[in-house]
Image (cartoon, rainbow, N blue to C red; front, side, top):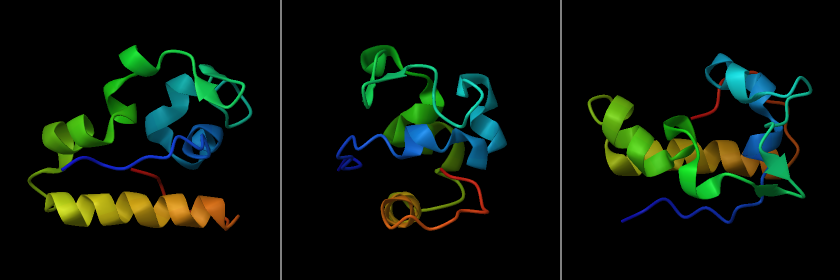
Length: 90
């Protein structure tokens, strides 16, 4: 099972919602590697941008894989609906 991402890029345009992604933020909340709504370093993107690997490394002791996916899908849905996120992503 893998996280099903449709690569909309909305998470990459809201990095200012989480301190975890501060180093990737180009200063306006958007990832410095996002070019024309696509990740220019997708194949070598940081671990924090890899949902499945991030789960294995940091969250497998806190959540089941399904719970972790649901949290990510919930944030994704909120971004797509234009909700203001006051919590952190991933």
